[in-house]
Image (cartoon, rainbow, N blue to C red; front, side, top):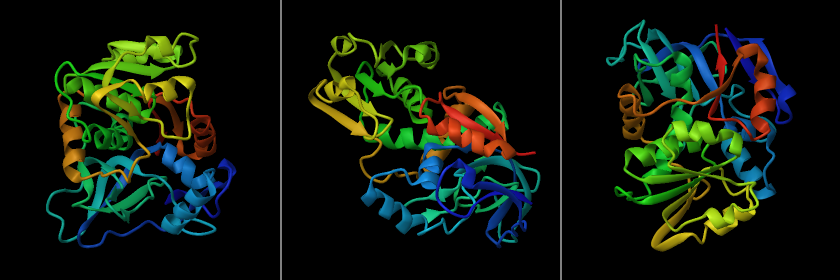
Length: 311
């Protein structure tokens, strides 16, 4: 099968298209013929190691020193079941599925930058909603699960004011929708060019973080959610940490290891089936243009998700 191999950490050019052996499913696994995957910020971070020194050591402890132990990146997949192990009961050959290729806390199985992947049937794997495409299905799990991790730390009640900083990214676009589904009045922080996008997802108010009067537009919120992480900041972000009421909370995606239980994954599937959660796709690249896809994501300005299609 064709796969994108990374033999050392570095710039996007370390990603190479190669032919390798197709995996064979174990008794409890399904073999998925992948139709689409997503290039996430985490993929870019792992590939580049452009992080502070101590964090770089921690990343390599998890993924491997010098080069990743698993030479194929990719955290999400959508596709068709091509084969299954003898013990598998929940899926059949031909089923259209989507997946998040890990389970907490340390069960990690990247490898979706490839034509095939094997996953245990009990992991974050489910039938793909019939009302969305393979590309849309690949755009939901990463941002959706990380946004759910943040929203689950809140107790949003109808009418609560929630500020989402970084509302146009893969996590932010999902957080906007989940907060709205919970009844919040949502203010989205992003660049002005993304106002129309976040408003289409339910944002009630918008703030351009580059505007000279951005800080004066802040109100008092029950929750302020940082969906971009602590490496990205602005004067508005600093000020937003103080824009919470006495019982309010400030939540960052960088606070603690994200929990991605299967119940959260299945909840995302249900919302997508109900039309209450929509995927946002910025760009779509074929697998052999993965270097260009990584370059684009690394710029840090993508809207929602960047997808790789695999034919």
